[in-house]
Structures are given as C-alpha cells and as structure tokens.
Image (cartoon, rainbow, N blue to C red):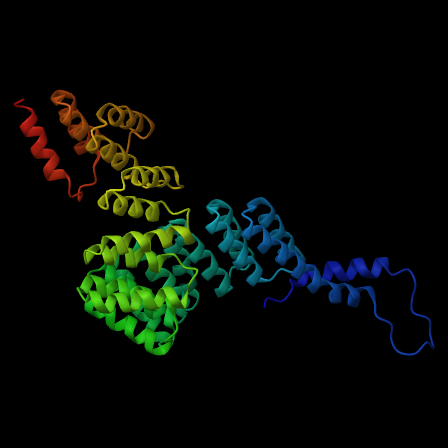
Amino acid sequence: MLRRDSRLLRRLAIALTLSALVAPAPGCGGKQPTKSHKRQANATPKVDQLLAEARQAVGARDDDTADARFRAAYKAKPDIAILEEHIRFLLAADRVPAAVELSKAYAAEKPTDARAAHLHATTLISAGDYAAAAEVAGQALARDDNDPDAHEDKGRALVLAGKDAEGLEELRRAVQLAPENVEFLIELGNALHRSGKVDEAALQLRAAIKLSPEHARAHLVLGRILRDQGELEESQVFLTQASKLDPRDARPWFELGVLQNKTGDNLGAEASLAKAIELDATSSLYWYAYAEMLKINKKIDEALAAYEKAQTAKPPHPKAAAKRGLLLAENKRYGEAEVFLTAAVREDPQNPYNYLNLAVVLEMQKKYKLAREMYERFLAIAPKEDGDIPKAKAKVRALRNR
C-alpha cells in the first residue's frame, strides 16, 4: 500500500487546525478524538464504497461511471493498487490514451519509484507503444540494473517490437534475478516460442508449472507451444486444464478450437469457439475464427452473421469483410458479393484483403480486366510476407491473356 503523499497530509493538517473552533475541555477524561482522527477513520469506508460502485459499473459496462468512481477513489486515497485497477479497466474498455495518461502522470510524480516506472512501462506495452515502453524500462535500469521487473518490461517490449535477440537477453536476465517468478518464466517461454525456439520454450513453461501447478496462463501457453510441437494430445490436456483453472477466460477455448480444427474435429472446434464468444463477445478474433468454423461446417447464414460481428467489432478483424464477401460469392450470390466488397474497399482502402477477394468475385463473374486491377491493387499494399502474394501474381499474369 502506498503511503499518503506528505504534501497532502500537510494540507489536511493545516485545514483541520484552522477549522478547530473549540478545544477539548480540561479535566474531562481521556483525549477526545479530533476531526483528523474521524476523517482517517471514515476514509476507508468511503474508498471501499467508491471502489464497489466502480466495479459494479464495470460489470454493467457503464464505463463513464466506472471511470469517475475510480478517479474519486484514488483522489480519496492515493494508493497505487487503486491506480493499477483503474488502468486495467481503462485498457479493457479500449480507453487506451486515458490509461497511458494516468500511468505517465504517476511516473512523472514519482520519477525514482521503480513500481511507478513498471506501471507506466506495462501500460505502454498494452497500448502498443513498444519503443516508449523499452525507453521507460531502460531509464529504470539506469537507476538499478538489478531490477528484475524493469528487465522483464524491456525484454517484452523489445520482443514485441521485433527485436527478439535483445528481448530474449533481457528476459533471461529477469529470470536470472528472480528465478522463482512464474510470470517471468511464462514471458520468457512466450518470447522463445515467438522466436521459433519451441523446445526451449516448452521447458520454461514446464518449469513455471512445476513452481505453480494451478497457474492457468502457464497451462494455456504450454498447451499452445505443444500444439506447435505437434504434441496434439498433450496440448489438449493442458488447454483443457487452463479452461478449468480459469473458467472466465475465453482464450483457452479459442486455443482449443484452433487445436480441434487442426485434428479434424470441426464440430468440436465450433463448440469451443462458441464458448469463447460466450465468455468474450467483444473479440473480433474469436468471431472471425467462429465464422471460419461455421463456414467449414456448411452453416452459411450463421457464418455470414459471425463474419459481420468480426467486421464490426472494435478493432475489426482485417479479413472479416473480405471473407464475408467471398462467402456470398461462393454461394452464387455474386451481385450481392460484388456490391458488398466494393463498399468495403471504399470504406477501408488500405485493407489489401478486400481487394483480393473482390478480385476473386470479379473473376468468378468473368470480369477479367477489373479482376486483374484488383489483384494488382492487392499486390501494391499487401504485407511482403503474405502467403497469397504468389497466387495473386500468377493471377495477374494469367488475366493479361484473357
């Protein structure tokens, strides 16, 4: 728990002194409680009430009320635990700039406080500003190179920024400084997995589970790693266990769905992804995966509705609109598909997949010149590593001869 700011205490003391109109009468027994004592005694119930109202508003998705109550609670009691909870809420509610503003202000107020730097760095990571997060963590390390949290923050930020080698070095240092920290082992395993070092990643996660056998996320990450190792049966065991250890988390169900699709259990995959959506109906990724399974299972109208959910979620899934249009065309609703994808291109001109699938739909209708133009637009803006690029190039060459 953070101690109350000393300046605030001095201001309160002055205010209370000025407002004390009557001194306790002599000879009346023990010392009477002052207004200062009463205020301190009443502070905790007030803060508890505000936090209870904030959490109730979070559950009711009344984000404005939740934000206001968290701010009032922190004002009444400037405790970093309250600030951390407030920032977690803001990030979950997609109020990222407000979360960054709070963490930045707190770090500026306490420039030598390691916990303040850690809070700001992790908030920046959640906001996707990996360069700034690495810089904040680097400043903390300049003050104390033996700060394991700062090494972990910097390592995670660097890995997410694509600097795997540097990030892994920082994460290994964090684990070296705090070998019993399960979260550090998980992040190191995650980073190793991202870097393609799957076997070593699995070893780190097994070590984490040995330290904390009931840790849901450790089971989840290990299950995902085992799936990529081809250990599908063991992967299912760990992913299933993760779903039991944290029944409110949608992610294990999503990963189970991916695994079941990989093993050919498409009906099981559909059921698992439906469970993921039941637990988190705001994720465009979950809606997109669910739509894909509905499509595979020939539930066309349901798949179209799920693609629409993935397209309209915030942020939308980048492939949802294109796949929705393509599914319309595959079911011979060509005119509807062309109109839909043309509108999608106008609304999101930097999305390469809308051009790609519009090209496919136009080619189905033998509109070869227009189709070639759409393939060329796809190639102009598609990510260099996109797997559809060779196919699109072949289409452009073929359509030049039509």
